[in-house]
Image (cartoon, one colour):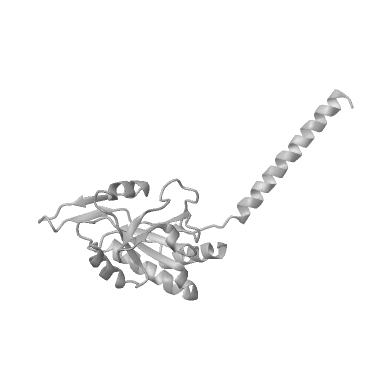
Length: 204
């Protein structure tokens, strides 16, 4: 084989290899599931927690293996965003029908000064008895919020106890293996979240 033929053959093989990789990449992309929420699969934040629920039981994501977990940060005296989000999550469970038992709603308070476990237990019961509120002590909350990239800030009211809280309004969604997968934006609706949860359950 002449040197020119050898070079042409190498160029041809390299081109075929690149084309094969390109086709494989397209095939993988086509196989990927698309979600209504923001796909954050593989993120290095919102990877887990170690907290106590409103019943006094220690909890981590491992406790909910086999379920899709949705976490929302808020506070019980929130006038609109929090009750709207938790009501939406309860509607998602209803829309899932028989798969509703495979959804776990979790609420983490950004107001540990007022949101005692007893208060949070009553609050969660008004949305769904299977949803759990998680308590982070005041000194542990800043680091937890940072690990989730959650914003919160105390806003003073006319009296020391009448303050409110500004906070992030989206929800984090985990698959049945406890891996962070999605960020569901506030106001996206129950139907969109239910569809995404169904897709994650189908992947289990």
